[in-house]
Image 1 (cartoon, rainbow, N blue to C red):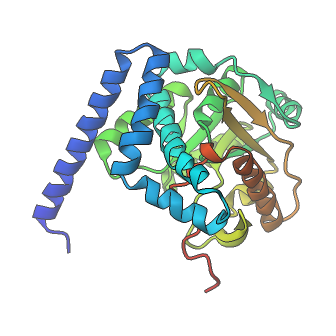
Image 2 (cartoon, helix red, strand yellow; image 1 turned 30 degrees about the horizontal axis):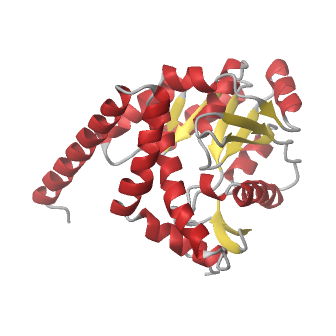
Length: 297
């Protein structure tokens, strides 16, 4: 049973977290964009990563799927991954400055022509991405290209921060729906109108299918493929790849995944994410408990 004391303690904790985050982002907003992102990257690498225990999670995941990785590379990733995460959050909260910076990002990939054709013909599209680089950059570019994309998010326990985060996401590209029954209904209504939805493919899902990812089984949802099949929608992987300057992006739109069955299609999506992660190890969110309970029941 949750006591009133525990509830009060949680409320104070969330208030402090929200105020601390607001102060940090507010401080960053006083700086020019380039300096702001450099500061946030440094804080992620050398303050947030160690204090939040992110480095231990990264080391654990790398030990599982990349045990032969040199120690110096592991330590580099322990700094680079939280740095990318902190930059991505700061970018999302930077609003118009972020939009102006990334809206002219180059678009590449075999799926770009198919995506434009679907946009012009009113065919629904399920865009699938990963916790990689900063997918909000892709949302900016595709929105400017006339793609009407609805997103979905997991509501955070910290309600004050959640409200500000949702507002920041909606400023970049609306609409966005919460990951609940009503939110899913809104998302699917958007798709049925011939528009596009964006989903993330690299979550741990407790009742997901075991699909190989980075050489180890990982529980993975089939929902992206199931939705695409049910609504005769294109299923297209889309990524925003951060460039060496730390500020700019390339948008990759891969070829649509052929319609077969949900498991086969999801394996193709997972293989797509894996190839990208192996090519850019420092841009994926290695802090996920991606391989939790990864054995058959």
